[in-house]
Length: 333
Ligand SMILES: C[S@@+](CC[C@H](N)C(=O)[O-])C[C@H]1O[C@@H](n2cnc3c(N)ncnc32)[C@H](O)[C@@H]1O
Figure 1 (spheres, rainbow, N blue to C red):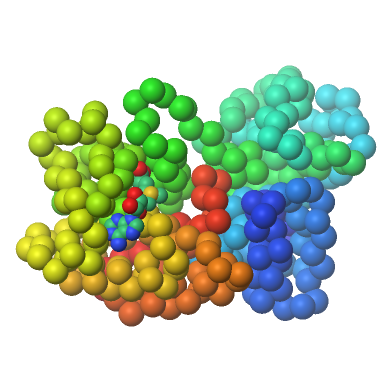
Figure 2 (figure 1 turned 120 degrees about the horizontal axis):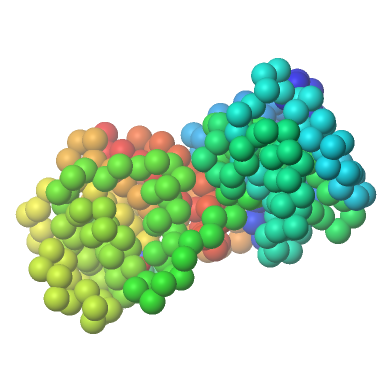
């Protein structure tokens, strides 16, 4: 992995232009940005490390995966050449590498994964799909196959192109559950053991269920109902009211506040200021700021400015399971 290489970035196809605006805002108008797929772009003029740092703290929100491009082909070369190419990039011979493949549509690029796996395994390298310090990316586009190599620490996500796939078991209460699970995994969040959490906009209870799995006692605030499967759990308290009314009467101090309420970014962030008086210092906040309006980037930035009045914003990103919204991780000041 050497300097001066192009960086490949993934963003939701609908949010691609927002990502480009952010990239130009961060690195100046001179960086070259080129769309190479529905949800993939190429940037020249910024290093992957500085790119990752800007994404990590949420200055760039609409990018969810990064890799450094090492080659581009019309067809994948034979295995021995592939292995030479990847291994020739590394100063030290690796014991293990992750290989991640994906396609321009929703495909997993399975056959490309296997070809890379075979090529590298034949050279004595252990290959897995995730969990390694170094990641080989293989993006299969309509016109070209692009290979990337990156430190996992600079990749933003340990999934191919940031497309996290979670099991859809019958125990799931809502699709929204995926968003909270993805946020916890992506940002490595630890919820305090035996903590008290308030879930704003809880119905039908997907986030509440995940919070319970992470050991929280949960106050689930929503005029809407909770899934019947959650009713017998005595550590779930359904508060069938709005967030504003709940805080007007509440006496509990929370360790965690999560908010998935359906409302625009600024209104939702203002509700978080109401919540702040009921959350201990250092308490964790997880919020989805929902798209809305003609300009979701400016809306998200305005929402973040409001949040910063009472919270330190740690991360802000459009994750794979977010549609027209971003997920914000913050800490009560
Ligand atoms: C996307 S759903 C939440 C899904 C939930 N996180 C889950 O995992 O099942 C949004 C919810 O916000 C609730 N909501 C909207 N305004 C609210 C308010 N002022 N107070 C409480 N809940 C509100 C709606 O009733 C709706 O159930």
